[in-house]
Length: 146
Length: 138
Image (tube, rainbow over all chains, first blue to last red; front, side, top):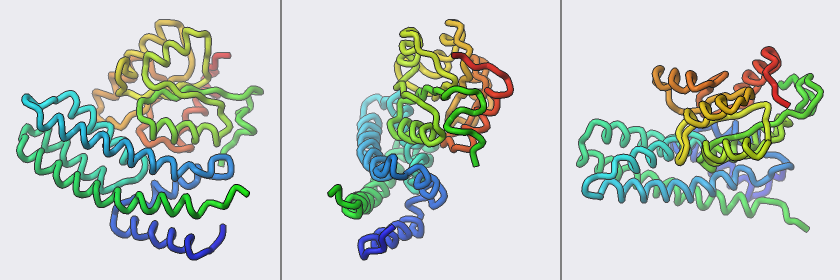
């Protein structure tokens, strides 16, 4: 694997994800074992999918929580989906905040749930900003098709 | 690590699997996991699709069944498949860890249950059960 400045940048960025607790080292290392010449875009595709899906789940959660009455079944379903996908790609902070929101929501305190959702949205926005850059760098680091 | 040769698992034929999961990330990971183990596999997005695929005549050595899915969940799909006479190895896959919920899923007709996320080690442990129990459908 080439050790160009771009690859070094990627390494540094990846390490900062781990250091900041945004990504779980073990889970990401595991996912990297699934990527090879047969499927060289595996990680990039996973992260891209997560960026898309997680935004959608959070939007649905927000709408469901703002509805009168609160849409419990959508909340339950979306929280479960977000918990699952974030665990699958190792997005630890998102997973943690989702679990917190689930607990608060199950306790029945809607106002606290709304506050918890704001925290989740902040974490998500922060993670998304960094992950978008990382995915772009992953694309650029791929060898040319020619 | 693996004790298989080109996905044959000493059975003399390429193994097949069906991944039943509504989440695109899990679909991608599980599909890739199985592919890397040399297991030919396809994906169904929910229990109903899994039933339809079987109704079209397809059979699999292994079914990885997610619990919570829209339209038809894993519990109902497992029950239906067993009622249809499908004897494939069905492994329930879920993030749920409440004993009662796992029990309910097992009682629907699962041969095994694994917590997400799946790893190749977990899949290999499921596959070993197929080899020992001989419950393969061709």
